[in-house]
Structures are given as C-alpha cells and as structure tokens.
Length: 303
Image (cartoon, rainbow, N blue to C red):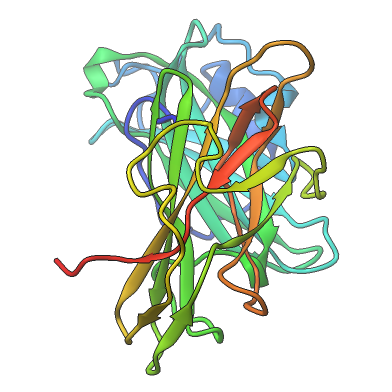
C-alpha cells in the first residue's frame, strides 16, 4: 500500500516476455514514427510528437523503457520495459510507471512487480495504461517514475506459496491526514501450525540504497506523535491458528521544521525475535521529526 495514493487508479499488467527493441523504439514513438495500430488515430488520443522524453525518464535504477505502442482497436497504450539486476543476489523489483500528456502532466500511474531477477539477468515485460476513457487524453509518453528493489528472499508475497517461516508479512491499509501518517502491518499464518506473537514488530529503517539509518527514534506506542485508538495498548500474547492473522501499525508525521527532511523508503521487519526478515516499502516521509511509532501485534477480528 502507499500512504499517499498515486493519483489515478493503477493498472497491473502481468509480465510478458518480449523481444528487446531498445530505446530507439521509444524515441521513435515519441516522434510519432512508430507504434502498433494507428499512432495518429484521434479517437485514441494519439501519441504526441512534442513531448520531451529524456534519457533519465526512460531509464532508472536498472529499469529501462524499451518501447511504446497503441492498439487502435481498443485504444490501449502500453510500454515495453526491461529490468536488469546489477546486484550480487536475486532481487524483486516494484516499478511505478507514469503515462504523461504532451505537457508532461501525469495521466495515469501503473505499478508492476517483477519477482526474483537473478544477478546479471535482464527480464522483459510490458505494462498497460488505464484510468481514463481514451478520448479524454492525448498520451505524450511514459516515464519510469519510481523503482523499489528488495532482496528476493526478503520480498513480501501476498499471494504466492507460504514462505518457509509459515507467515506472510505485508503492508496493510494506511491513512494520511494533516501531516499524520498511519500504515498497517499485516501478518497471516499460512502454515499448518499455530504461530505465537508477544510484543512489537522489530524494525530496521533503510534509506534509498537499503542502508540502515541512525538518528530516528522508534517508539513503542504513539510516543506523543498523536493519539490513535489502540496504538498505545500494552502488548499481549497472540496465538494465530492456521489461516488467522494479526496487525500492527506504524505512525509518524511528515512535519518539516529546521534541518534536512528525511525520506526512508524501506523498512526491514522481523515479526518477532528470530523471525526471518521481510523488507517492506512504506515510504516513510518523516520530515524532520525523527520519530516513528509502532503498535503491538493484535489478532484480527474474524469477519
């Protein structure tokens, strides 16, 4: 989840394996020279010929746009891309693409996850724009807006096979109002045995390069950040039967006063002492507050 929605609804597209076409295709599409179907069909909001698309827009953090196309029969704008893992271990990538108008305004965001890319491997994929009727916009291009990458063995997986730990840890729901941020942590027992919790999630805060950050105070409870129902309740033992789940929460403010504003994309979470870590991306925009509150695990109520 994201504490601040990306604007228009994201459309997820499954990974498709495509031939590599190179950045030349993207440049040609920008110049109106090539696309699938009719690139100048006005009913589809034809790709603009004057949108500046720089190399920085086309490539970021191992992700590169390899091509753009429009299908006239259904006015679907798509972007081909490739992900190259320059790390020494397998990584999972979550990429946000921004489809933009000829003036550069974001028309629609789309998010794509590419799991377990091996070191040195390049994986091809495609993402499709959605969010508005085609007649209401003119697509000018696509940018790689954001890339988040985590070690594959620490990546959250809400739908795959149950991890060896027997639990899935993922981001839950969040809220943002008047500078206050609250985001949930969700833990599901997907094993065949009971799972026991007693206390708070253990957190390690990481910067853009996934390096540990010091100087941020992690507080049990609200710590004076705000009063949120249940956040300051004392921890109690929790036993989860197979299929049951528990939740905790993170809370912070993005207030900026004196000093340098802090933004930490990643948090490494251990559900309890000795549990294997899971790296999540709550996008902690901590401002200059230097504080993050965490609530204890609580069993979720049955529906």
